Every structure is written in structure tokens, then in C-alpha cells.
Image (tube, rainbow, N blue to C red; front, side):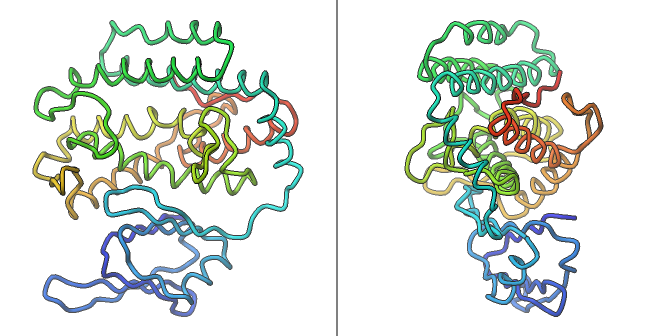
Length: 325
């Protein structure tokens, strides 16, 4: 099963018998059609505003295929999801945890500790030995409320990204994490990678039957899928950050692959395809799962973590985030 990425804004995706028909505009102005069997697709990701016909959308939903929408910058905008889970008891358990301050705090500490460990691993594997990020894990255990834990998470993140200029060198001009807008190519690439990761986590949360808007680390505010953002944290260093550092170190992308649009950097069309291919390769990487002990891909691991979180909420089994050493 694959993810169907459509990056051309003029593209049209329609239904043709038991396949999706993709119509793309060519450089000479002509149009070219190709088909992809629906049985080989489990998600569709649209960048910009390509047109998905009503027949194609209905067919995708009938088959349980999720359709995700991202801006041309890679910002996640939303998803069209198949019918919701009927597991009302799980959602009630999710809400009860939210109302229980002690359970909520314990879960948030677990998530942040895993993120810090994975950030440390990213730096350590790249030869950075002097970083002392792990001290924040012991600091976490002393905190008595969510705001304090969020503060430590933010401080650790700043220290983590402060090491990146050393890893990347002066060529990229990276001075820290800036999101709105991304002020340099590295920040643009990070935002793009996080948008792609969010697509995968959104699908997993939906598949597990969880309410994406009731989270614990991220505040529950209007329009913010707090639980999706919570579950992303352990995967940001492992998937997105590692990928960005790798493609830049291997010079798969160069400065000329980015363009400045009204003060915000973004990938060029060709570079976007290169990075999507790299992301798909990364998300399909296999490793030994630290909880289950068998080998799986990152895509499968995201789904497993959503189900582990659901089991924690409903059955009280301690949640074990994915940590790789």
C-alpha cells in the first residue's frame, strides 16, 4: 500500500472503474493521464489545490482511504476522513483522563521525556557528545503542573536546535527554530517534514478511534488537534529531524532548491518531489520496536503508538512512547 502524493496544482484526480485517474499538465501545455489501482493506495495527500472529483472522493471514503490537504508550503490544512470510530467508551476514557490532573501530568511527563531522549539520540548519533539534554528528564519528574512541564519541553527544544548550526555548518544560515514564517531553508524543510508527519499521525489517531482534539501536552483550544500534536512529539526527532539532517548532509537538496516567497522560504517544485521520495523512504524504514520487540516501519509504529495510547486511556496500561537509542 502506498501514499499517493499530488503536488501539481492543475492536477485532476478522478475515478476510472477501480482506479484513480491522474491528469497532469505537461511542460508543453498538453495533458497526460495515468491510472493507479485503488487497491494499492491507503492515503491521498494533495498539495496546493489540485482537483479531486466527487466520484473519486466518494470512492476513496468508501474504501477507507483518507484524503489529506496541505498548502504548497507543506502546512497541514485538514483531512477528509472515512466514517468515525464507533468506540464511544474509548472517547469517554480519553475525556476522563483529561479531567484527571494527576493522570494527565504523568502522561505528559512520559511524552516529553521520550521526546527529549529521542532528541538526544539524534545528536549523539551525529557525533554530538557534549550535549546534556538528558538532565531535563530528571527535572521533569520534579514538576507539579502542566505549565512547568511545557516550559521544560520548550527549553530542551531550544537547546537541541542550538546544536544544529554546528551539525549543518554555516552554509544554511540556521539560527534556531522559526515557524511562522520559516525564515531560512532549514526551517522551511522542518515545517514541511512536520506537515507530512502530521498527516501520518492524524490517520493513526483516527484509525485508533481517538478524538484528535482532546490532548494533554498541547492545550485544548479551538481548531487545534491537541492529541495529534501530542503523539507527534516522540516522532519529530526520529522521523522528521533525522530526515532533514540526512538530506542536507548528503546534499540531496541545495540552497537553490528553495525560493523566498514574501519572506517565507519554500521548496521548489522539483525539490518537493525529491523530499517526498526521501520522506516515503524514511517512513518505510524498518527497526525493532522497543515495546513489541519485532521489526516494523515508522508508519506502522505510528499506528501502534496510537493504539497503545488508546489502551492506556481505556485499560490503564502504562503508555510507553517509542524511544530509540
